[in-house]
Structure formats: structure tokens, C-alpha cells
Image (cartoon, rainbow, N blue to C red; front, side, top):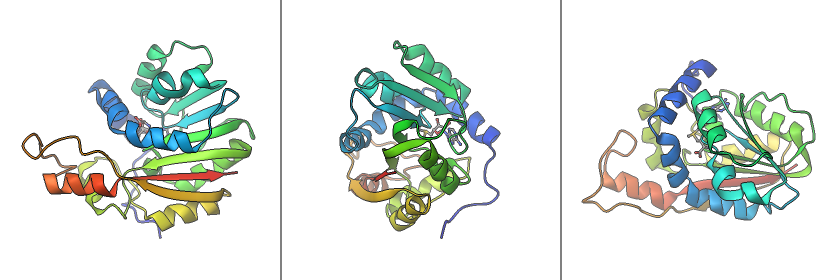
Length: 233
Ligand SMILES: C[S@@+](CC[C@H](N)C(=O)[O-])C[C@H]1O[C@@H](n2cnc3c(N)ncnc32)[C@H](O)[C@@H]1O
């Protein structure tokens, strides 16, 4: 069962929230905090010089601009936040990389065109992740690869504080539920793995926040780690 709060945030509310994150420099912070797990995901996906890659919910576009942009044939990053897209575009120095303001759950791309779709910490914000995953299957080439990084999921109980901390609604699914969603959307060879995250602060340096109310929660969150899901069309 999908667990969610109702009513779900509108596209406008999500865009407004992430516009604020972009202006506050949180895009750059995510490029640091999401990097470790994302590198592991990209290693799983066999990206090559022929790859045509979609980054769904690309934020400031660091996956292309800093990690794989020079290694692929074409990259398109999409995000609802105009401010995130503006930063991504301003940092892009390569003509084969493009950043567009668009909704990841209902794209207008032609069918069968991406060899790879990656999405880092974005899918659980969409009201209908199944719809998004079906659409990504449609626009993926036959044999195309999908890779997701999810940090808020039921099997990492320390992440549940984010649900209250975030002013927008989210899905909090289990690993099993994510598996079922991917399979139901038409993806095959669904594989999950968990990547424990490096603990980046000591107890004395730790600052509590609504996301991590104390150090033990932060540590437990890192130990449970990111959920990486990969699949094939
Ligand atoms: C937590 S951030 C992650 C950004 C980026 N992937 C990263 O790792 O730095 C989530 C991103 O997903 C975007 N997003 C959420 N729902 C979206 C939707 N329906 N369509 C497009 N982008 C969406 C947000 O605007 C935000 O930039």
C-alpha cells in the first residue's frame, strides 16, 4: 500500500518550495549529500559515450555538469523548479546538455528515446509515482536502464522525520512497495540495494534540525543508508 498524506501538494507548491531551496543554496548542498549514493548508482548503470540520459528531477544539474556530462552523447535534465533549472543551465558548458522546466510525472518526450533514466531523491514528491514510472518506461529505449536513489523510505525509520519537516507532501514507501511499483509500471530486472552513507559529522559538531532531531537519529539514518533501485525496460 502506498502511504501518503492528503491532499497531495500541487505542482505549483512543489515548484515554489524548491525555488526557495535553490535560492537558499540547498541545490549545492544536495550535490554533496546525494553524491556518494549517486556515484554508486551510476556505476551500476553502465553509462557510455553513446548514452542518451534523462535526469528526472535534476535540481541544479550536478549529475551532468559535474559527474557524467562529458561521458555521454546527450543529457536532458528536467525539474519543476525554474530556479533550479536556471542554475543548472548557467553552469552547463556543453551543447549536448539541456535543462528544461518540466514535470517528471507526465513528460512530453517521444517514446523510445532514452538509453538511461536517472532520478535522485525526486520521485516520492510526485502525487503519482506509478504514472511517472510508466511514462519513463514509455520514453525509455527497449533495454534502457532506470536508476533511482531514494533516501526517504520506510525501511530507513530515521528518515520518517522528514515527512513532518517538509512543508510539501511525500510518499513514504517500503523497499517492497518500490519494487512492486517499478514492476507494475513495466520495468523488468528490478534490483534494490542499500548503500550505508558516510557519517559526516561528530556528536559535538552536530546541529539538530527537524530532519534529524538528534545525533542518534542522524547516525541511524546513515547506517540504514540510501535505497538504490535499478531496472531495465
Ligand atoms: C530533493 S531535490 C533533488 C534534486 C537533485 N536530484 C539532487 O539530487 O540534487 C528534488 C527535486 O525534484 C524536483 N521535483 C519534485 N517533484 C517534481 C515533479 N513532479 N516534476 C519535476 N521535478 C520535480 C524538485 O523541484 C527538486 O529539484
